[in-house]
Amino acid sequence: MGREVGDERIVHALRGLEFPALKRDIIKHARDNGADEDVLQALDENLGEFEYHDMHELLEAYLQVNLF
Image (cartoon, rainbow, N blue to C red; front, side, top):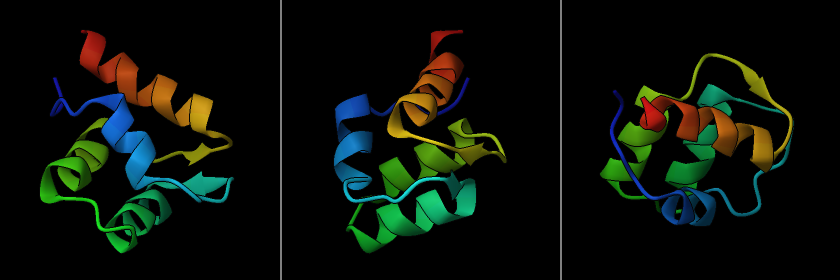
């Protein structure tokens, strides 16, 4: 199971993210937005190497990892 960080922290870190976005772009955007290390690690551990088309798809993928 990946690192657990609340989805509200993820959404806050990714505000203004343009889609579609690859995992590396998502992490860079979060870092540029001042996300803390827990959020950055959670994104890295919980997101697959995919292109995400919107925030809903990204959060769905993130939360899937944390449900099991």
